[in-house]
Amino acid sequence: MRFQITDLLKVSVLSAGIFLFVVDLFVINVSLPTMQKSLQLSTSDTQWIIILYVIGYASLLISSGNAGNYYGRKKMYLIGMLGFTISSFICGFSNHIIILLLGRFLQGVSSGIMVPQGIALVTSLFKQKEKRTLALGIYGSIAGIASVLGQLLGGILPDQSWMSDSWRLIFLVNIPVGILAQLLVYIIIPSFKPDVKAKVSYTPIIQLFVLLIGLICPLILGPELHWPVWTIVLLIVSIFLLVTFLQQQKKREQYGLSSLINFSLFKNKTFNIGLGAAFSYYMVQDAYFIINSNYLQVNKNFTPTMTGIAFVYQGIGYVLASIIVSKHVQKNGKSVILFGLAIMVVGLIAHLYIYNQPTITIHQIHILFFFYGLGCGTVLPSLMTMALKDIKTDLIGTASGIYLTIQQVSICMGIALVVGIYFHNQNTILLDIENVSHAYSIATLTSITLLTFVIFFISLLPYRKQK
Image (cartoon, rainbow, N blue to C red; front, side):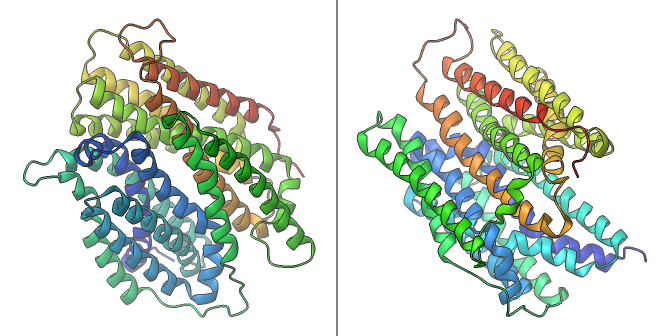
């Protein structure tokens, strides 16, 4: 059976959810300095703009699939897209940080509703293996394009001079896309019969959200407030409650009750090591974009547009490497990931060297970012494949949900810790480097250390598939 135009249209409209989520995850990185200046935001405010978006998404990620089965995947997708469109309107017209943060959180929650439904609908629509593989490939490609486009739009849109506070365009452009996507999904995507036996529990969602806020809040506010007692107490209490929450979920599973997590997965050594590697890696990934975007604009006199274009080269390197390694990751996954990590470490060292030059050209930055993108494109697509390679087929969906939740939590931790180090160590003198700020140097060395942990975890993986 051939892949027809109508099939392509269905995949495209169902990819609108992941497209908008990824665009808004990346678009904010380059535009943050402009937003901070316009709204007179503190450094912790800028961190919360990203973190609340990710936490809102991560809190619903595991439970959203069950909600789609119970209420209907198409219905939940439309609700998520409507919520994302409305929350983009709130962000675009916000004139106070509280309203902006509320809008970002609602964007994240809406993404947590619609993204899992999009991938579920794609797999349900295409029963034939060849068609499903092609559809999922298109879906993934659109997500990859969105990451590059997000960086570019984050640079170009805030530089527009035909309107004041043009950074608002990064949110307002979502509105026509969201409206069009809802109309097309309503018209061309069929509805699937809900599974009334599916169990949906809202308590774990609320618990997970509160726990994540409790963990991350002191990590962000602590350095800015010089670690008052309440931040330390909150951090300790949150860690204790997180452990209690996991124990509670494990007991529910043992008694045959519905549980947010399938703990049998953690008997798999490869899966555990893969989660450890992913946690360390994703603490670096988004922090890298935020730190380098801020540093180029604040310290190297790059405009938002110049910065956005520079990150396009990083995206080109990523896409090119991911295409090349896709043919080798199944057979030589461990070696591929270690090679990519070596490129990333060398790339970060090269960042310190290039930035330390008295004058740097835009072409040097393009080559530097392209090289680093090659490393990211080698590692990122391979990490999840390696982590899930020994998981039984009937548990892949659950394992993927846990992996993606760890991914989002580690992104938050990276923003809180690595970006926090960058923002709160502007006056620290540690390294004898003339033309690179000490804050940037310390943050970059922290990222290199985290990548070293990833190398350690990956080195523990077996070369052959475990029985």
